[in-house]
Image 1 (cartoon, rainbow, N blue to C red):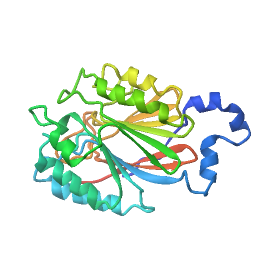
Image 2: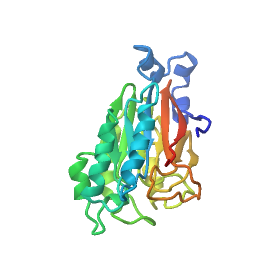
Image 3: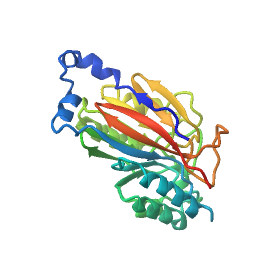
Length: 274
């Protein structure tokens, strides 16, 4: 089942600070996209909460892989926003890495609270997914920022840790404020969504003067959509056979996202277990 496409609007900052450019048809994102006619147009995948842990998981992820590989046009990369595993072990994180490799496209992940072992150890994730904690990547004319929003294995009443804010304060000034930007992190950042970190507002406030188009989150297994200024913040149903959805829905799947002209059109793709 495919839900109707959902359009994510550009951040209102770009309208306020670049009104003259917009009026002249010279918004910076459009200028970059016009360079080769395709620079700002591409598709990508967003998965969340795969929770690899049971004997049913290999067959399930074969179905997910088949669904993704059948997409036309082919997505250019994949984001996985945390809880790759259930208990953070190599026997769980290793197969998820293999699944991502089989997609034949670059993948970028951030950790979730279930990517720690029950002993609060994240070393296996760090070994198998090096340098995928707090980082920035550029794709065509867009900027993507991946952030660690975990506090060990805690799942509620959490706080985003100082190391993440330190990294962000160091790297955010290096971003182009006008270029369309996407943030992806595990814990939900939108107000009113269950299990939101207690200091989520402190993180979002740092992007006030940036063209933050979209934020993709997981942790809450269910579809939510909220606006923060002109930024759309979403969570999605989990892409797991081993866990259910918190909102009591039964659909499982992922987002396929189309970026064009500084906006994103997002579509939910359902994957059935059999």
